[in-house]
Image (cartoon, rainbow, N blue to C red; front, top):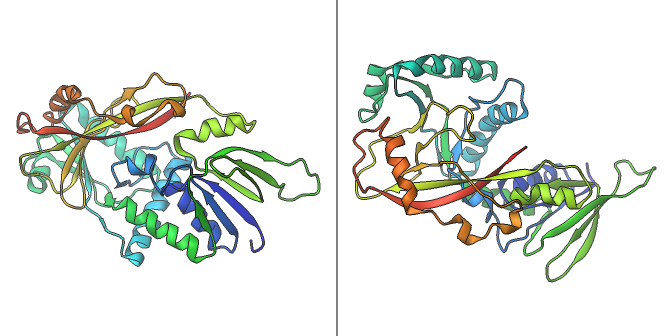
Length: 331
């Protein structure tokens, strides 16, 4: 690919990973980021979980990317000394009626090539996590957690070490494929805004603009689905000791956009719970501001009831607002 040029919209983890992949193949790469630093959008507001690829439909891009990407990510983190932990995850059935759903999850995971899962009895779960209350669980030993900011810094370093550059405070207004019959691949013109608007020509364009990606595509004349924005709130455990050594996930709720209120530990062994699903009324990412991300302390009532299904000893008044993230579901 030497001699080809690429422009990437967005310096989050996806944009930086794409830019790195292109740069190490010899392409001239420039990343344009609307914010003042890397990872200030979706990438700064997630649970930092390395997923195993359990739930996705067989053959889907999500399933394939997750299963293969997990292996690549662990290898990359080990090579670059990026903080991570293969802590494992338990998917728990909190009543006997959910045991059949555990079997269905195992079948889906097997079809995706996830072959390290183990179905555990109630007694076996108690040996691993004495504070956990359930009828049975699936153990996913290859689920883990990662320091996402260190990961992004490493990706940025790789981009720059291979001749690429990352430019901040430079939002992209639109991109357009030139009508050149003899151009293979066709040349793409990228128009940026900010304090110093410019036009760039490239061979490859990657739209990794996070919540703004559908709008950017539409402004550029491409069909894009309408995004429905879902806010996920997180609360952290305060004033008592974290009783868990693994991630704890309930059975995914049917006909919802979430996996249920789960317990996630970070690399400092701090415990947080979430996300829930709070649908926003806005129809544009431009309407989302810092105030939108505020976590309402009053939402914790539902968190207590959800968490106590698998941790009945959760103390009163131990949950405090932590942070929130926003994603979109297309429809």
